[in-house]
Structures are given as structure tokens and as C-alpha cells.
Amino acid sequence: MIRVLIADDQGMVRTGFGVFLSAQPDIEVVGEAADGAQAIQRAAALAPDVVLMDVRMPVMDGLEATRRLLSGGEGPKVLILTTFDLDDYVYEALRAGASGFLLKDASAAQLAEAVRVVAAGDALIAPAVTRRLIREFARLGGPRAPEARRLADLTERETEVLTLVAQAMSNQEIAGKLVVAEQTVKSHVGRVLMKLGLRDRAQAIVYAYETGLVRPGE
Image 1: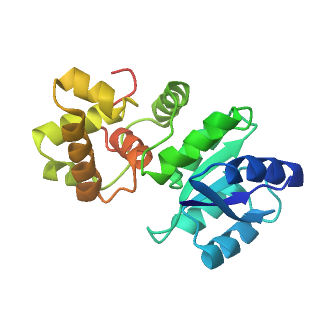
Image 2: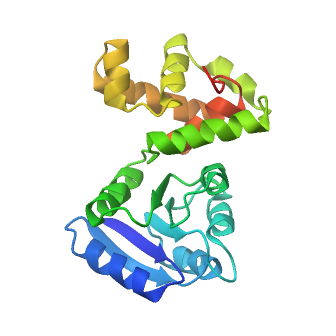
Image 3: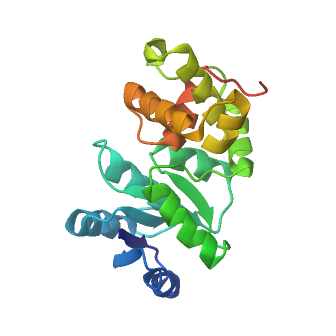
């Protein structure tokens, strides 16, 4: 059962999401929060697997709440929900450690599937969002992360897989491109995340661009 906490300053949104998600056989809504500070408190008390986090909230916004929730390297998966499809929200949310980014106009079925995807440790980053991330990295200039030396710990195949992950390719797509089994790709991705100390594919995408492994326009 996937335990979910809904953080949104609009009561109707929390109720709507809660009713739908609670109807799913594999999802349990364990609590709600009306702002970022409350989300941090509720997450500590309720230990959810996934937090649906709105961006614009009073007291503390969703981006800062995400940073604080995940600052210790542990914590729930965070799925950012917003009506604002803006570049800086996408970039900052993923840098803060969020596992996905979903607009509130997504269908109910897409919402439930998004919860399942991030709970499983995968990233929910649509190709359109990846394109915006690439534009943002291009705007920021060259590599900026100091830990690029950790890339040397990866095998040639693992580096290749990370490069394809950074292009927002799924395990199935990577398997097709490399002509290997999908389970093999999954194993490679797992080892990449472990060696680089990353939470999930979302962080892997950010890491690949920030270390210069992949550059905008390639």
C-alpha cells in the first residue's frame, strides 16, 4: 500500500485528490497539509511514501518544503503539483530532490499513475519538461557540480546508460537502443544511482547535466 500525504493550500484540491486516490486499491491517503511547514510536520508524524506537494503555498512554499524534507538524504518521494508550467519551478523542484513534476490539469488516472511511478523509485519527467531543463542548463552555462570525479567509478556501460537516462528515456527505450534486456537496464540504473549516491532518475538527469556528462544541444 502506497501511503500519500497531500500538501495544497486549497481545501477543494486536497479533498478532490484525496477522494480519488483513496478509491485506488493500492493507495492510502494518510493526511493533508495546507502549507509547506505543515507538510514537513505531517510527514514526520505520518511517514508517507509519497508527498503530493503544491508549489505556491503560504507560510512556506513547496520548493522550500521539499528541500527541507529531503535535506538529510532520506524521506518520502515528492511529486510536485502545480498549475504553473514554469521553467524555474521545474528546475528548482528537481534540484531540491523532487521525483516528479505534474500539472494539476492532469487526469485523475495520470495522477494515480504518477504516485505509483515515483513510489517505485522512478522519475516522472515528461519529454517537454526535460526540454525545459535542457534550456535551463544551457542558460546556466557549463558544468557546476564539484563531484564529477564520481563519474569515474562508473563502468563504460553504466556511463552510457546514465547518458540515455538524462535524455529521459525509459528502461524499455534504453533496452531497445542498447539491444539488451529491460531487466539488465534496470540493474545498470540501480548501480548508477548507488555509486553516485542519487535518490532516483530525476536526480540522475540533473547530475548528468550539472557534471557535463551530457550537454545541452547534444
